[in-house]
Amino acid sequence: MMQAALSIDLESYWHAELLRRLVDRNSADDRVLPATLPLLDLLADRGVTATFFVVGEIIDEYPALVKRIVAEGHEIGCHGYTHRPLWSLNETTFNAELSLFTSALRRHLPGVIPRGFRAPTFSLSPDTAWALAVLARHGYEYDSSVFPMRTPLYGVPGCPPRPYRPAPNMIDNDPAAPIWEWPLTAWRIGPLTLPVCGGFYLRTLPMPVIIHGMRKAMQQGPIVVYLHPWELDEETPRLPLSRRDRFITYHNIGAATRRRLEKLLEQFDFTTMTNVLALRGRDRKVRVRS
Ligand SMILES: [Zn+2]
Image (cartoon, rainbow, N blue to C red):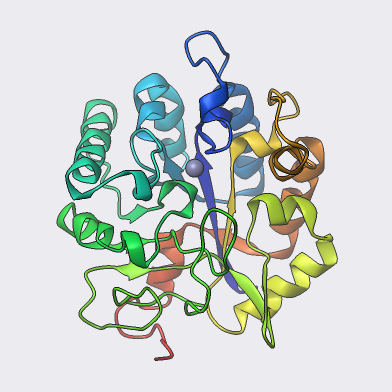
């Protein structure tokens, strides 16, 4: 079996861009533990390790949870400190977010050095490509924030289908780029791009399409799947959203998506992002189409 990367964006349900304004964080239950602990049990049961892109606030609020994640062999990456998207930050405030994240890790998990970053809400695009140099200054080696198609909030259509060294337009390869970019996985069929990489698409597309699409995408490079713990939690609070946003946010969350993840764990040999990049011989052997 060819290896694939599994990435978990560890945050509360209310960190999502559509919901953050609707929740009073001081009185609501964030459901981080009931959403995440069963996922950790499942991964331990199947002997699978993953990359957890963690929101820094979660490290400070749930240090024991993050310690368990590290103890079980998973990789810790950074998902910002407060989950603010890059388009609401600048170099100074992004620098501050990364410093807060590093401090939280040092406080609770000294010795753990994050190598990867995922921008909240896949907010890396040519407009926010300044973030890559900031990440490199903080010692990050790879980023995984580019979504391979245009959606209402984000996306970089035309990006390469595999890890590459991004030029400022986030499409061309530039060997001098400060950091690797590993875009989320899509199945490209002629002019069409079908994201078979996780989240809403993993909850919504028919499973045979997802599995076939992932196998096709693997022919072009290593694949990466993403999920949020709240997508596996039957009791994620349902907030009053428009019909469209309700569908995007809540369709199939809970047991249905957990069964989908279990099926993927049977079909693919998942590991951390760093493991897959290293397996491919990161600097020498990753083939990049320019
Ligand atoms: Zn997120």
